[in-house]
Length: 309
Image 1: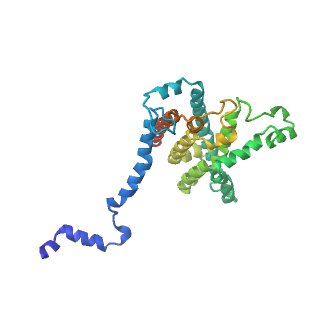
Image 2: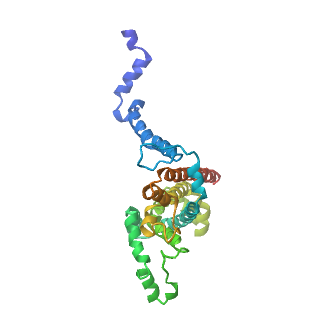
């Protein structure tokens, strides 16, 4: 017994037991339930959805027949599906650029100098916590031809600018993008504010003492040090753009015609309105692959840029 108690492993075990609970390592077996749940809810569900993309399941029948690549041929052969893909790419690209430019501008303006910055931060962030569907209905009223926006334009002598903002196929998609930017600019601002507050104030003060202008300090000091925050904000905005759904449904329901159809609205329409769940699963699989491909490529490029700065 004495020999056993003197073994290094036993002594280490006794020392571990004497440690405070907060400092002990967590046994791996405790994570098994959580890992199993994550695998079941994410990977198994994604795998099942991917399998249905190669079937003709209608969402009701008990059986699904294998049809191979027919759903994907129909998808890429459909003019509406191709336009939905193109609209998704256009909207995402515009949203990522604009929301990050506005978010960065707000963060720079509200970082340290403005007295009421805390109130203004809260006001700019407030739309983020609103329901996207409720926000879309509010803006649908604003964009109405007899709504406040056209009323203000008429009152200030810009009647020629009045438009059926959500009824014009050439404008409707950009109106959707504007609402999406308005609601999420505060989130991008919070990412950049977190990055700005991690930059020591002494660096900016030293550069100012050395005679650097505000623009030079922004370009040579602040922007490079914000690279990690920019990576997070751009990556998250990209995923948001590809997944946009509630805002489109609430504002235009994909119209006028198919001018604002996206991959997510087509997925919903084909799956729940037309009962073509196999075809809808093909849309979902294309969307997952698109998000994964663009996000990974984007992260690689942004991480490489961070390393160079």
